[in-house]
Length: 216
Image (cartoon, rainbow, N blue to C red):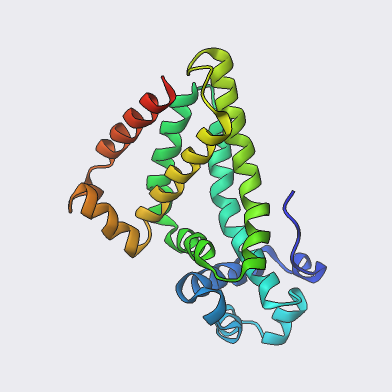
């Protein structure tokens, strides 16, 4: 369960106001990073006072943790819905890749926030974030692979934990590649200038690699 990083007063305000504060903060943190993000700017753009902001959150770090949790939870809910579908392992993986292609383009600030989180130099902050946000996806992917082994979809000698880790890294890299400038340019270097017009080719190519790696 994700730890709550906000005061009860934040839960008592309207959902519209909470979403306005969080969406404004996602943009600020994604574009400026944790250290450079300005809470005064966030408060002003969200239409609240800085004093109110610090009634909701004890520290800037707690505010950032809440914002990251909100942003990543939106994507995780989408991905988790795939895991309950009546598809085999490879069907689920393909569905996740297609969702990533769509979601990352529409919600670029959320993905850029996730990218910013992974490059943050604050060791304590990153430790808290990774422990809270990665545990759920790790558990889901490991269970998904174990089930595939039991059903005979993939080789029984596949290392479930390592495979889940590598899968998650593929998913994460794809998210960044469809939403952040550096990773977009990197993808074009490897796959060509027109790669973002070839979604089906990306899906087919990634699935071929994953099938062969897992013995499917």
